[in-house]
Amino acid sequence: MFDRRILLTTVAGLFGLSAFRWLRASPAEAGEKAAEKFEIVKTEAEWRAQLTPQQYEILRNHGTERPGSSPLLKEHRKGIFACAGCDLPLFSSETKFESGTGWPSFYAPIEGNVGKTEDRTYGMVRTEVHCRRCGGHLGHVFDDGPKPTGLRYCIDGFGLVFHPAAASAT
Image 1 (tube, one colour):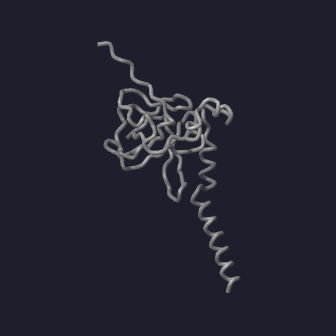
Image 2: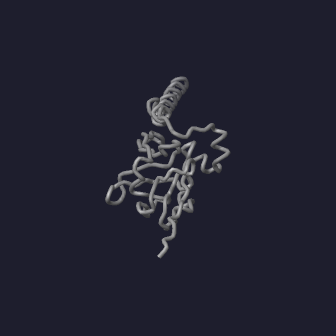
Image 3: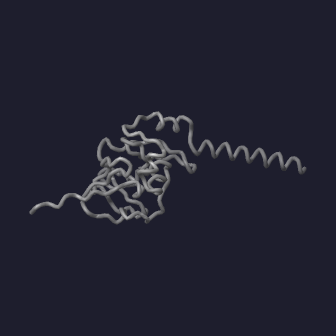
C-alpha cells in the first residue's frame, strides 16, 4: 500500500510538472519572438548598462511592475509615451485612459510600432505586446477596453518614457 501511494504521488507530480511546462510556453511560441528580427539588437551587458534594473526586468525579462507603482499611471499631460529601451514612440496621450487596473492603459498604439506575440504563461493565453524596434516587453492587450477600438493595452509604465508635447506659442 505504501509503495502504491509513492508511485501515484510520483506520477501525479510528473504529470503536474509536464502540464506546467506546457502552460508556461510552447516551443513554437518561444521561437516566434526569437525568430523575429529587430532593428536594435544589443547584448545582455549592453542592455543592463543602458536600463535601470526595473526597466531591464520588464523590457528584457518580461517582468511586471507592482500595480500603482509607475509614475506614468497619473501622467495626464499631452505627449508621447515611448519605449524606454529605444525611444520609439509607442502611444499617444490621446489614447490613454483610466482603466482602474494599476497600470497605464491605452486603447490604441501608434500604428506599426507595437508587435504582438501569444503568451501562455500563468496557465492562460494572452496577447503580449512588445516594441517592434527593440523587442522590449511592454505588457498585454485585452479586449475589454473603451471605444473606438474596444482594446485595453495594459502597459508596464517602467518600460516607457514620457515626452511632453511642446508648449504651443499662443
